[in-house]
Length: 131
Image (cartoon, rainbow, N blue to C red; front, side, top):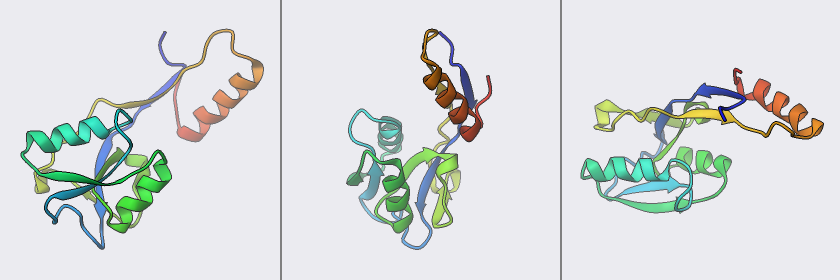
């Protein structure tokens, strides 16, 4: 079934403003574990460009990846809403492709409990999702 609410969320190549990872070889990466969000897109894009890379930091925590990339532990690919003051956004000038086609979406089943529906409504408002 279609999502209950959704919005497009562009992905950004985020690097540290103070300690750029893109300037190191191989390029260190701050990523989610294997088969998690955005990792495959990041690695495939770098591979297609012939950019050597290595995983220098991996975490299941989005907050940890945001902090790690801003601190210079590695280049990452995350939703635009994750950008912090300590980040530098990379793109065409650095030879990195735009990564598109992602959306933040909320799903729940038709017979969900009232508490689930109330939480979904709060999450929709917090994340700026539209029905």
